[in-house]
Image: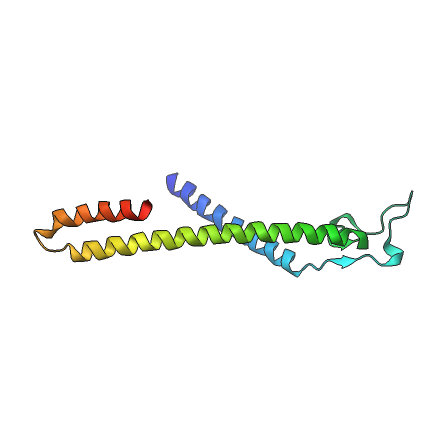
Length: 127
């Protein structure tokens, strides 16, 4: 029973990744275009654009607002990327320091002073 549950969870994870990849592919190949004059929604008449295409077929007066939203989103995503990049660099530096100290502290008597050096280097880099 436990094996079946584990395998079902793995299958679910793979299916979720597959669906997300397909969705991303559809989103990146969908083009936004401006409505043609005969596609304008007139008062009282139904919209000639199908509901599933309304996000990608827009009125020309919507373009400025969409551009502002995209610029704001891009700025937020770039800030998140910079923050994540700095965290990765910090963690890699800590890992490299730990590896260097473990490699340097391989001698019999150097073990005690090596662990003291780790605490000192982390205090120094954190503050």
